[in-house]
Length: 211
Length: 355
Image (cartoon, rainbow over all chains, first blue to last red; front, side, top):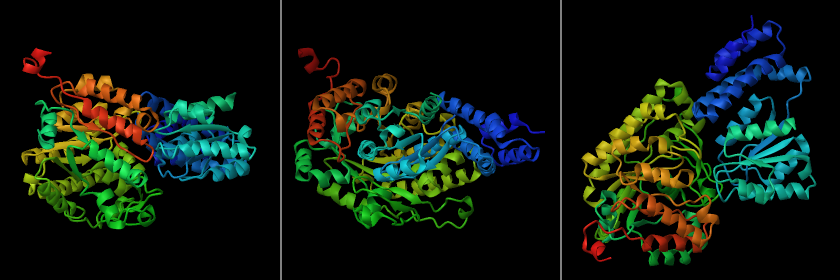
């Protein structure tokens, strides 16, 4: 009998092998992939996000939970695609030009995936035109840009300008984050939202997609 | 009072004449500002000689060459593969020799002298200086090296899973660093302090649970600091990010000077709790104030740091990183502010009585 409580707990406690087993078990019992996602994996990552926000979890606990969640999603994703299930929204993610730091961006990507978003991760050192190409090709609801450094975060403004020049600015919400980034900087460059934390960024994305 | 005495008195809370100053610039800043920055440092001379002699970035980059083009794909003595997209910064490890634990048994450990060649150069410099400046040498890094060997995400997940291999690696690295301390102590007459360099904070919190840090890494730093202090030298720690949760522990371990990143912590809160108990080489705000503020903002920030850490007959060292994004005017405002700051005279002294 599919045990969503156990599956949820396995995600929260970072037990990837157990997540894989329990997800497979649920599928074998005929449970719909979307139901497994909605009733176990996504709620589990919501709990993980809350625990991180209140400093019960730190980055290590978050990472193993995300890894466990991905073990389940890996089994569900092909079935969801076959069944024509739609993600909650689509996000293009990247660390900007000149910057190789990616752990914050990776955490946001994992949490977005855990929240039911489709994530297209462009990686690090992403030039403005690459973001523009990705918006054209992927037609995302959001792009979310990350930068650690005061020098590289300036590329966020360049990316927004490049999207305007390409006539794509109005087609996508833009979120930014990273250690040196501030709300004031976000306002100056015309980003739609900013968050000092990964969980905050994901919460803003969820809020915007519901609106 | 020479620089060495000034800095030592700041660490020991025994009344330097003014705030000692340590210069710090990224390579790109010298390329950008050239003589302008050199002249600034000549007008506001530093009190410390910091040798980037040992681990990784500087020693390795000097061996490979400063240009990011040469650093790309270069492999260091640990087998870590480096990359850097810009000459302005220190680079990042992109290839990790212990990304899988199965590789641990067969891993070839470099000898403790590898990357420490700069200590000879340091001794020559100190002798030429007649040891007028505080001489600080970096012994290396524990957590960063763990990240570089394992991969950042792997090393964090190891903490959450309490992997036994993590302790094996930690213990080998402690052994490595203790051997390095031993080598550095042979030159103790030319060295005043030994620096450990490990960033433990993120922008908002400690990177790992404080309880995990105490269990896994506090014993490691305790051993390293004990070795430094038994050797008669001062123990220094650089650590970026929010590290307030472990500052009590760092004081208990016996660090003599902390170099934390104050831009992401409450200056007054940290000063209230820890000012006067350990010397702070409190980092200037290099995320907002130094690059984007006005000279007046910079002066006001220095004043806040002085108020929080400097009013203990010592306890504050002026320090701020000049990168390519820092206007030279702001760098000058910072240095000029440091030089204006004098310690309050001790109670009962002639200067205080007469004022």
